[in-house]
Image (cartoon, rainbow, N blue to C red; front, side, top):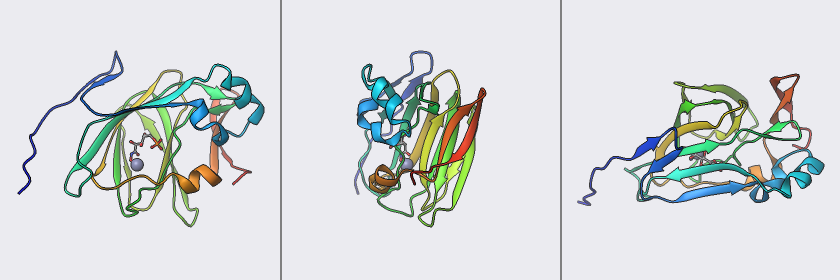
Length: 188
Ligand code: PAN
Ligand code: ZN
């Protein structure tokens, strides 16, 4: 039997750092510039190339039986009137489910089925959001502080970004008159 040591990680919410040995992913605007709708605003913002989000991954074997877990931080900001967001993905193992626990900030969790069925959940401190099997998922920071959430999912799930990178999701979340509004994505 494979033996694996139990261990703790620690999230410091003030420092916004996860204390663990795992990989840190930093996504800048240049990594996802085509995903925002306002091309002119995106090009302008590219001069500064802001960090849109970070993911602190705990180092876990990519095997069934294990649970991958990580802390994501989506920074506040907009490209044009579209809020900063994650790239969004399906899992390679499509029947993977996932749980997000919102620790700080305000966001929206957009989920979409391959047949385009769509759901949007609020992410607020203390919300535990369940992403059932088959749903693609993307998070959007609609507040003015970092959106910080914990995610956990099966060890061997993998990520599939392809379809969403090409086509986007069927809605976008934009600011209109100080409010976060869900709009159809005309480019989809
Ligand atoms: C999360 C996401 C993380 C970043 O850990 O991977 O928030 O989003 P993207 O992977 O879409 O860039 C998760 O859902 N993992 O499965
Ligand atoms: Zn996921």
